[in-house]
Image (cartoon, rainbow, N blue to C red; front, side):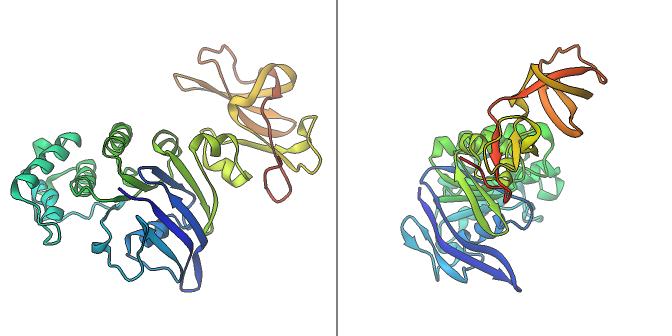
Length: 331
């Protein structure tokens, strides 16, 4: 497998800055998830690594080798897009075999059959191998698309929201399966998603992008617990972090403009009065939608709470995060 390094990479499309001097190291064997809204630069980062686009400035290295001038086929990377990108006139088996039949790989027939069979079993599409791609459901098509990347054993997997079109159960199943495959193979995986659950459950590292800049890079736990800014704090966590004026509670440090409170960091039973607007029962937990000093916030409580809308509870902050007027974290 291989380490991926982006060194001061910038890219502009028609006057719009897609990447702005981004330096990023994807460690060998890691599962790195890129987070950020549409236009943050996530997909452009993947395209820089794959060779589908080239940097205006800076350099991409894979396994220590500079990639400038190398075509995608010469980089030993496999990319999975949000769209299925299958050959509709071919069967599932033929779609899975296609990457292995490249003249560059010279894969023996027995090896092709073995890899296709293994991947089909892992992705639960073995019974569909002789079906045409056009006869598959959307979820099955995406599994075949993922399978076409897995059969190749590339140095780097690049995945651009590969699970976004799948139903919730299949998405959860494939999250577990992708993580297992990556851990077993030791592959380096660079993955783009808007799904915070995918980031928290799959990633060894998270990169937070905003307007083409890398805002923060670290483990999911580090980004969640020690965000460098309000923006980074809002990229992880469901429900989202509550961001309120710093003076809404006593004890704000000098220079603080806002306080960030994760829903689980609002203690109940002591402190000041808050009105329960709505109680949202979700099975394993219950969310309380509160109004506190004319501000809305969300906290979590016991799944079997007897609280109802219209009641009053007392709350106080626990483990608050403070940010300055520019939205940057105060130490």
